[in-house]
Image 1 (cartoon, protein in one colour):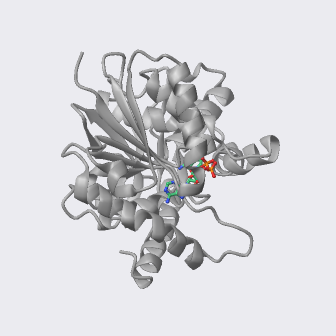
Image 2: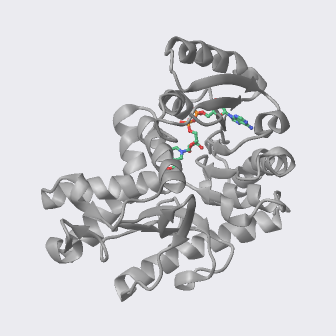
Length: 328
Ligand code: NAI
């Protein structure tokens, strides 16, 4: 076995944290041969709860769990981190304007970016889960000038997985037969789940569906508003499915996407598909040898173009807003 990998998790005492940490400890993040050391970051008021979770992790007797440290200081928590899962964020509360939300999150993601810059390992990979995820990732990235920009990513894998599941249901196919689906844009209601390049058992999924009304009026809004549907049903926001998606995102980034398939990750744009450079936007990506690359050369039809552009415009607006606030 190899040396333990340091995995820093912020918001460790939250509901996603509770679902996430046990799966990391069990080896589902980095595979069955890689021991992990958990470095948990919480705000001081939640450190005690994180300690409670650490007791339970101990009780899991996970052979791959090489240690747990708990911090309320970002510099310490990110020291030596190889993987950073930025889950803790400031939620929007009643009456909160967007600028207030962005500013509150700037207060979290700026110092965390600085801490990553100061002390993370050279191979650091960052996934931002905490919302607004894409723009929080942009804030953290802009305060980590010594870290290659492409190491900062945001999570649209939950949207991707939701879309795969809904499409499989519609086509009465096993989820494992759905490939090459893409989430474009922002992790928000403006996101665009694209099935035009997707396949079901090797056959084009859009042709198999052959129902543009379903696509426009059921599938897309269902995926985009699934978070609200979960809150309505469960009385709490998605947690286990979000943790599952975070595991999938890092797992595939490090260990690769399956041959003949791709996944969706929000990554810094290189200008592909007309997305302004530097925006952290969701794309189809393939991962191999620990690196991802944006899938190139897909034809974008009119239906898709309008929707991609709308979501990307929202990201550009968020970037302008955080620029104005001096957060990037
Ligand atoms: P939660 O409220 O249960 O937990 C958040 C935790 O973060 C709390 O324990 C809090 O003390 C901690 N925290 C706050 N500020 C922190 C800081 N500066 N440093 C370290 N920890 C800090 O929330 P939950 O349900 O775990 O969700 C976390 C975030 O993930 C939310 O922003 C939510 O909107 C987002 N989310 C994103 C999804 C995506 O697909 N990208 C899906 C689902 C949730």
